[in-house]
Length: 337
Image (cartoon, rainbow, N blue to C red; front, side, top):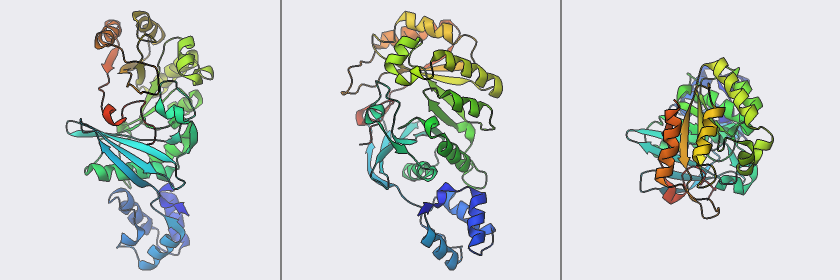
């Protein structure tokens, strides 16, 4: 059975009209799902019983099972979900003072094969449906016991290789008739799928874009990010300028720092050269250690020196706080277990 969360409000109106009921009932269903976060059709008490029976017979509203919730010493929570076909994905709730960010997955596994990423080691299993992405959000918000403040597509998978479902999930979550989650509080992270970035730049979508830079020369980037062979740095810089021009929004460049790989003063100077003139900020992410890989985290002094070189060149540069690493919930550590 198809999941009702795969449909926007217009499609839901069509479904309910075909069942012989007034279209305003679709708005009621929308409110139950996205405002009251009710995933049991039977509990939608203001709907006629016959409509609830019709919906229950033909559609589902719940397909994810929470298998485990782990809590870090810093308050970060990692939620392990099992999909209907047995594949597993993870979401991460990240507290910061009185705000919470949800890091969400878009694929089971990932086919990009980044050499430092635990998800990439799994390989690609499948894309998540729109409904599964939305259900991650709803179940995580229920676990959080208060509204999510920020949503980032930085979990398992490459969002722009599942773009149609990710886009639809964003549009439904941000729909004013339902959850009305502001797109300005959503960030989508990509390794640089150039055609999709172009599409986003030319759309009316208002979320923020993050690009995993990882290295500032093609040789090193191809070693660490195999997808660089398809969309290299020249392509990424060109589309970044186009994105700036079309949207007026800055780009966040994520830079995972690996000891003795991409953390030298010369690497910082290469970043300055290629990003010159681009409206952006840079997030430095000291590598989160994983025993499956040989990479190491740079010393704090090295990270601070790297940051200073970029700051002195006029860039906005931030060092990502490590959160949830003790439960393998930090950047690059999600492995669906």
